[in-house]
Length: 211
Image (cartoon, rainbow, N blue to C red; front, side, top):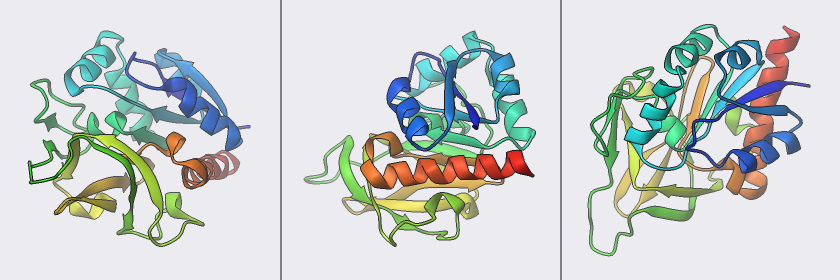
């Protein structure tokens, strides 16, 4: 069974993520240990809250370099919500530098008449790279659950694998580059679609273990 380290830095709904991974057939382990990240078959970085405290908590735990190392090693990695945003260089939400693993910035939704911020609830993905392995067995415009006021703006548009439209603004909802995948929405709150996405991730982990 695939051993997946779920990073604990006091900023994530860890138990919901772990339940989703268990249903997907993995063995999740909540940890803040760099050694556990090294030993795991894959890594999940969840996140809920504000950008600056998130990167501060990771750095206080000495996890920034281990996260970069496991991604560079080719190990499957999945970021969720804030765990997507802190992979980028900076955020309009705060002053702290992000991890800088992906080039680009985190931006706030522009105010519009009748636009609700945060963007909260169910919305449809537009799959810009339908062959992305996370999207296997999904419909062309699947419904998933969002809670966010900020979105990532990648410098490299080719890493964008899905978008979502809120008001008149179409923004990045997911990215992927090699072994790194990250989503703005919450798969663990997205019912059967979310479980399928987590199952697709776990399947990739199993394939890498078997290779």
